Amino acid sequence: MNFATRLDNVETSAIRELFKLLGKPGIISFAGGFPDSAMFDVEGLREASQRALQEEPGGALQYGATEGYEPLRTQLAAFERAKGVTDIEPHNLIVTTGSQQALDLLGKTMISEGDKVIVEGPTFLATIQCFRLYGADLVSAPIDAHGVQVDRLEQLIVQHKPKFVYLIPTFGNPSGALLSLERRRKILELAVKHQVLIVEDDPYGDLYFGEPPPPSMLALSREVPGSREWIAHCGSMSKVLSPGLRVGWLVAQPELLAKATMCKQFSDAHTSTFAQATAAQYLKSGRMPETLRNVRQKYGERASVMAEALTKELGDAIEFTAPEGGLFFWARLTAPGANAGEFAKRAIEQNVAFVPGAPFFAKDPDPATFRLSFATADVEKIREGAKRLGRAL
Ligand code: PMP
Image 1 (cartoon, rainbow, N blue to C red):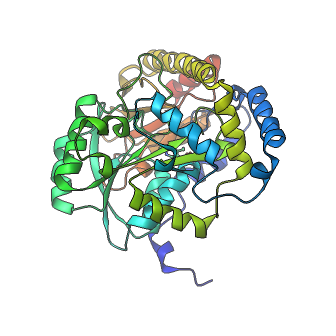
Image 2 (cartoon, rainbow, N blue to C red):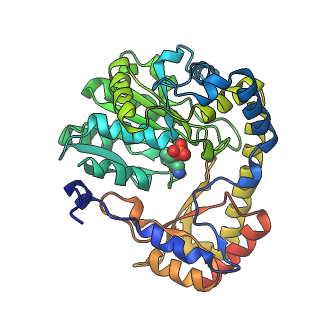
């Protein structure tokens, strides 16, 4: 088959290969990126889908507007307003088929072959693949426990004049890192100073375990004059409600939103109206605050058990910062020359799985890093999994 040359830039991920091994019986997996199916509010979603069919069957089953189902846009604007984006209106966002589609639409509308795009090192693997598909030349900006390093980011912006900067400021995948309030402000100032678009990917911001994180960069842009037009914000129902619904959204300035809408029209015409009507009814039902409390509490408990168990079983052999939200621990083997890919193979022999960190870097991978998800294992499994990791060292 003579495939399009754009595919030359992209490989299927090393992680997919690893996932093939996960069918092994008895394995404890810290490898996935899924939320826990046991936490889905099935009853609430059943009621919401029934109400969607009863109250507006035409809307829920017919073709719909590319921008999204209006009652859902209204609910999502209210959801964002409650999180400090006080000036948002329904027409400032479009509904997308997962936030993944928002990223794809940003790639499609912004990236020409050879354009530079700055991403965090490490960053979300599917974004790396997606932007490369559009021909992006990715530049990797280093992070620490407080997110991307702003001084380095500014140097890279000046040096590479990127089309945009892609960040996951709140409990990043895979880093778990939380960008500090001070850095958020500075980055918004950089956006204005250098006239560069910042893409804020935020599927995990609602999944905090203790104190709420700083406001999203979208919310904060109100305080930095001129910065709103340089922010594109991707939201998602996936990690808090259900990824199978495929409901995400994109907030951006009108011109960019119009181009993204045009591209979406050629792509899937619109996000499933049934899913959108269900999500709208769900948000309207008022169950969301309780659902959020529930997932925060459960994931928070798992995260703290994982922090304790890793410290107990692996001690100084690894370093990590316990995340304050999200689904992931990002860790690093401390032995000189250590390779997390080799560690992953030994771990599978011990019936425990995780994902090596190298594929999450667009450039200059750190082979000693790896990602552990605590989302789908209960606390007993987390403790047992950590013991097995200790044996695999
Ligand atoms: N961005 C990040 C950082 C993610 O981790 C994910 C899901 N793993 C997505 C976007 C896509 O999520 P969805 O399309 O389900 O909204």
